[in-house]
Image 1 (tube, helix red, strand yellow):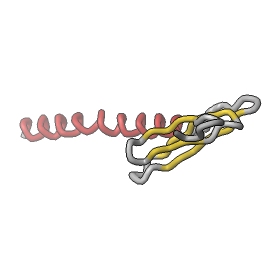
Image 2 (cartoon, rainbow, N blue to C red):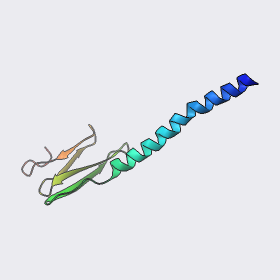
Image 3 (cartoon, one colour):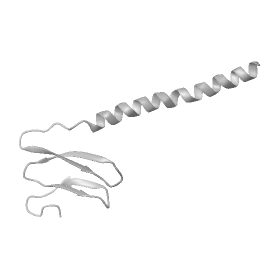
Length: 84
């Protein structure tokens, strides 16, 4: 009887950190999804990759928002060469 109780206690203690970690991960993902601060003459760029991951970054209003799905890369382009 005592061994069964001890095994059940160990099993419950193994799952406790996992649930706490899951709550922390949800809080971190909510913070990451928050929009960045935009200054004067800036714009927010958003892109969703084919695998479902969303990215948000800030560029100057004159610069294009550039994203490459193949290499999962985003950046602010140039006013002259655009996204090259």
